[in-house]
Length: 149
Length: 113
Image 1 (cartoon, each protein chain N blue to C red):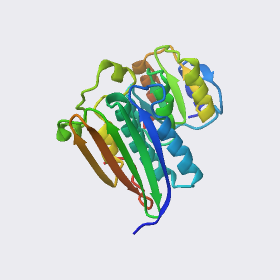
Image 2: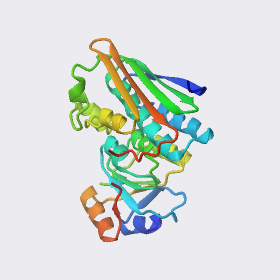
Image 3: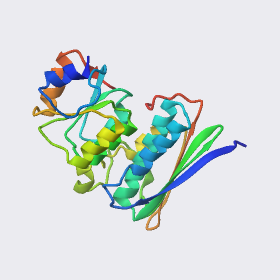
Image 4: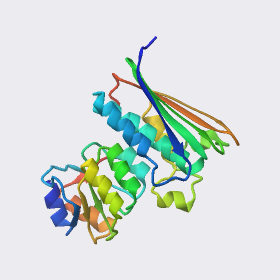
């Protein structure tokens, strides 16, 4: 069983576009201080950032959590929101239900969940319509993926 | 190619002037931040018309080393403050995205993909 070394959780508010991304950039700072491999940090933070933006764009509120073990980094982003009616569609690159407001923020082009999946070694998304969504990702500390398929 | 040479080539105005002698060998250009996250690589230069705070946060997350805003779009002060805090040089060009990319490609730079 991997040993837990460090964990942190951040609250995220829906529609708060000014603060959107703060949790993820804070995670980056923490992981740099912990001297994690820069390639691993990049993958973790892309996952966290995309998932955090999804909470801001679609949900009422949520949390971004990460756990560092001696084996990997786990990220869990859970929200209270509308949920995803068709997960298969949501995982297709380019498919999006974003509004113009979201696109003006530079997001909502149907790349979020696909980006999360491509940067994860283990990826899972669970969603209940009308309740919310939980995205979990694990990224190995000894993996040196370049973030591309 | 040095960042300062790139800026001069595009006739840029410097908005956050930090170390502009850094070497840039790849460029990523998009107004979609997920595209930047998916297709840039560490150390790349980012060209975008998106001037809000998310453009700088995306640059931080993607390890982008500098941003040039195209189409003469000027970011608000908090955006520039965050870039300064994060150590990301910022420039502004009046040129459009297509022309900017074409000029830099002709100067020898390649896409980050």
